[in-house]
Length: 212
Image 1 (cartoon, one colour):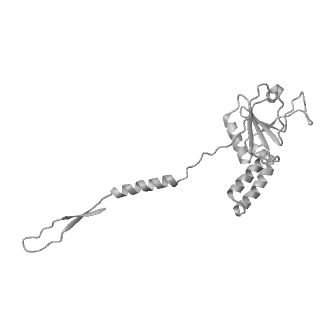
Image 2 (cartoon, helix red, strand yellow):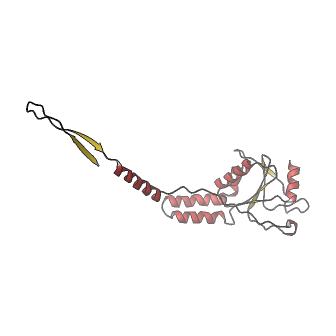
Image 3 (cartoon, rainbow, N blue to C red):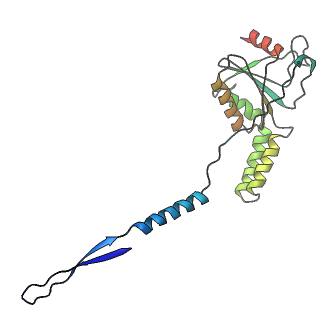
C-alpha cells in the first residue's frame, strides 16, 4: 500500500505559508503474496511434458532353442546389425541344410543413406499399407471428421494388422549402439508398430560369418 508521509514545511517569519512537502513510500508486501498466488496457479494448471517412449516387444527366453520351433510371423522382416553394417532378409529364415521354396536365406546389405538399398526406402515399400492408410486417416482428422482419440486408435490397429510389416532386430557382439538407435528411428518414421529385438540363431551367425 502506498503511504504519504508528510513533513512539516515551515513558514517563514514574515507570515508567508509554504506548501507542505510530501514523500511517497510503496509497500511491496502485498505484491509478494500475489506473486506466490500466481506461481501456485501456474504450477497447478500447467501440463508437464511427458517422456516419449517407443514400445519394443522382447520375446521370452527359451532354455533350449533347438527343441522349440520359432512361430511364423506374417509379413516379417529381419535386420541384423554387425559392426557398422546392416543386413536384412524377408520372411522366415531357411538355412542351407533346410532350404525353403526359394532356396536358403540370403542376407542383403542395407544402409542408412538415401540410395536404393537405404533402410528408409526399404521400409517405405514394405509398410506401404500402413503409410497410405494413415495418410487417409490424417486427412479425415484434419477435416474434423474423426476425433484425435479415434485417429490414434485406428493408427494403432493399422500397425498391428496382418498386412503391416513386423520387424525383428538381431545384433552380434560387435554391433554399434548408434546403428541400433538409427534403425529404431527409421522404424518409427516408417510407422512400424511391431518391433522385437531378439538373439541371433546359430544358423544366422554362420551365415553372417560367411557374409563378412
